[in-house]
Structures are given as structure tokens and as C-alpha cells.
Amino acid sequence: MKKKRTASASLEALRIVADGVKGMTTVNCMEEERYVPTIFTSYNRATGLGGHPLRRMMAVHGKNQTGKSILAAGLAESARRHGHIPVIYEAEWAAEKRWLNRLVLGEGTLFDMPANLDELFSKIQRNLDNLRKGKEKGLIQDEIGCCFVIDTLTKLIPQEQFDELLKDGIKKSYSMQAQWVSLWSKIIVPQAYRSNSSFIIVLQERQNIGASKFAKQRKVTLGEALLYDVSQRVECTHSKQIIESGKVVATQFFYEMEKNKSDGMTNQAGSIFTGTGEGDAPPGFDLIREAIEEGDQRGVIKKQKRNKMDHVTIVSGEEEILSVQGGIEDLRQHFRTDSDDFDRYVNFLNVGSRRIK
Image 1: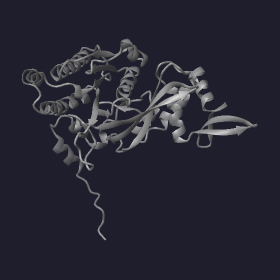
Image 2 (image 1 turned 180 degrees about the vertical axis):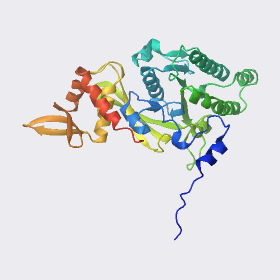
Image 3 (image 1 turned 90 degrees about the horizontal axis):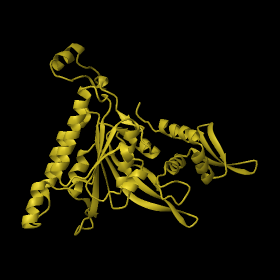
Image 4 (image 1 turned 30 degrees about the vertical axis):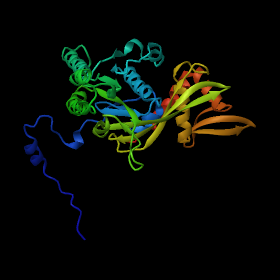
């Protein structure tokens, strides 16, 4: 039986080979993954990190009305809460100030609506250059980065091709756009890494007209290549209205993490909620409903009988963390009136989210 080879080059050999190569180190000395805990406990669990990875480019795709923009906005808001600079480029020209403010973005988030790819790429490069210069002058702390949201990239084409379309009409697909995006992503990702920034690219799915029964029935127009280039890919699959007392009080948006280089796990599913203001939550993100749903899915929320009274209990192994008389609705109400207990519960979920040691 052959012995397993375990020999490695000497440290002196490693030093000689790496001599003069700027930035080279051993895998063991690499930096730890950088991330920010998000406002979504299910997303923190799905990444395996306990949050959203920085210095990466991710794609969010799916059909209309499945929560793509809402998920992206929540990740940008999460970055803001941890001192980073959220920058939203909205290419659909349909953003609603009232709704964005309900998602807590407000004055702490930069916002712009580019008209074409040339303008978008130029402005992002200027943002990154300004970030770098601010750090060099000591005006911005080194660990601060930008969280860019592009919603949606598939709405934009290069100015040159746009001019051709106005002059000659539509003759073929926008192949130039795909080439531009692919080249740009390869240029921008190293800059994002060095500046501690991240990109969230929102892509639309459309019906693949004329596809055979063996082919994909839906496709990401001009974004298929980007789905393979990014380090993280999330598909927003569908949504469901939550009805209580005959009123729509919330919408639940389901997603699946299809690709994730942070910990190698795929097919991690989760969901997020937005409230309509008709129920016990104000309009915007319903983080309490989301965290309770996540706890229920993980099996840490138990329904019990105590002294003939219903109780809902949060447990960790054999340890009881919290117990509330009543059912899930009563637990939700308790968290709405006791923010300390809710923060403690969210911390418990997030601590249990991290798989990488």
C-alpha cells in the first residue's frame, strides 16, 4: 500500500519563489473573509458566514415581483448600518422615494439613475477613485467600503449602440452590452476587493420564447455569462401574500442561494418579509416576522403546554432562551414591544449561522 504524500517544499524554497512578488503569501496567512451581518437572519445563515461577504460581486435574479430589488436594498441597508457607504444605481427610472424611505435607506444612501452603460461605469469608477483618495487623505477609514447596487443592469446598453438603434432600428440582440459587462466585471472586481467594497447586480429574467421543452423556459437576458462570473448568485423564486383578519398585512419573498464561494454551500433557501402597514408592523421590512420564520424553520421555536396554558418557547439545545404565553402571534407582539429581547434572539440566530471557523 502506497503511503500518502505529505511532504511540502521548505520554507526557504517558498521564500525564494515568492521573493519580489508583491502581496504573495501562504494560504494559511490569507486574510479572513470579511462580511457584514445583514438585517435578514435567513440570509446570514444561507451564506455560511453569518452575513454578506464584502469585496465580492453577487447577482440577484428572478421574475418580476419576486423581491429582487427589496433583497438588494436590504443588503445595502445592512452595509450602511455597519459604517459602509451604500450606492444605489437605479436603471429602471421607476424608484419611489416613499418606498425607499420605508426601507430605511433615506439620507444615508447615495442614489442615481444612469441613462446608459457608459455613464454607469464612469460614475462607479469615479466613486471608487474618490473612496481611494479619501482614504489616502485620512478622511475615510480604511475599513469602510462602498456597497453598490445596480438595479437593473439589463436595462442599460452602451451609448454607441443606443445611438445606432435610434438611427437604424433594432436589427439584432445587444451583443455589445454583454461584452462590455463581462470586461467591466473583470476590471472592477479587483478594485472592489482592494477598497473593501461589494457589488450587488440585479438581473431580470424573461420568458425564453421559442425554447424547446428541454431548454430553459426562462433566461437572464444579457446576463447569463455574469451569473457564472460572480462569486455569489441568488435567485428570487416567488412571493406570497400574508393575510390576517381579511387584510394583506405582509408579503413573503422566497429566494435560493444557487452559488456561494464563501463556504461552498449551494441551494440554501430563505425568505424575507415586507409589511404593508395594515397589520402590527409599519410599512417596510418586517424583520420580526422574518426572524420568527427563520427560527421556526430551524426548529428552535417550540409550542408547549404549561399549566394548561399555551406557550411558545425559544430553545438552544436543552437551554431555554425565552418563553412567551400564547402562540406565534403573541411572540411577534412581544418582540415589537421588547426590542432588547428581539435583539438577543437575533444575535442567537446569527451566532448559529456561521459555519466557517
